[in-house]
Length: 319
Ligand code: SF4
Image (cartoon, rainbow, N blue to C red; front, side, top):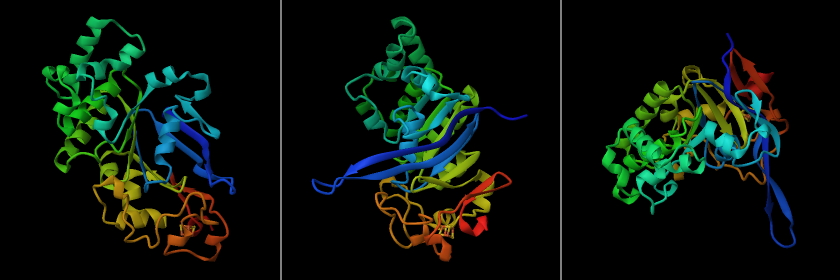
């Protein structure tokens, strides 16, 4: 039986105009370039790639925070254009990288967690309090934390508050954008395990965005690898980590990963630096860094090649 998709991007592109100065006019920056991605209900899809590859723009499009230039987003098979932003917010919620900057430091934990209920006018003050207590329990925080401020909490506790806020509306899908990379290593696995437990308990669907392949391998059922606005490889997690096809994925897997997201994926195996998205390379956009490139790579963009649910966009496979 075919599994229903909770969230789907269909040939989504997003182009920004970048001002080049008074006499030079503007140039297009293609942040997302014809991306199609399906996230089945109850599954975890990992999205990996270096900083600037378009992951966060794609996340914003899926969250309804950024309109795509073309293409469509489907929520449970229905086009996003039929939904208001409020309706989307009830179905899909984000958890961001840095819980400190994503929480209002002037508000109590109780106020932060109950905010979505108050915005959407769901229930009353008494029910908000009991709902907050329920959420604190769910994310493993004591009830007394309700009256605390974010500055009085540890990084891990703050991320638990952010998770409680994201889940209080019981969304179907959660987009986790680098959910542990601002945390101490010792706390990271606790938060990942909490996310995994909550997914099973509440039947959630996750898009797990991370530069850290170990996080994605730990959590994801399927993995999509993004490079310069395109998904260049996608497969079941076990297959992708065992038998990566695309030279970029292979380079990522053989790189020494850093826990600091600001550093992105190191270039040890990738030669030259990440290209300027305003002036992308011709042909396959990975060709200036690719150790396996052949003549056609600089001239023609490769077509996606699909074999046994394993997609790779590379001339080595599309011949
Ligand atoms: Fe490398 Fe060519 Fe494949 Fe691009 S198409 S990844 S340059 S081999």
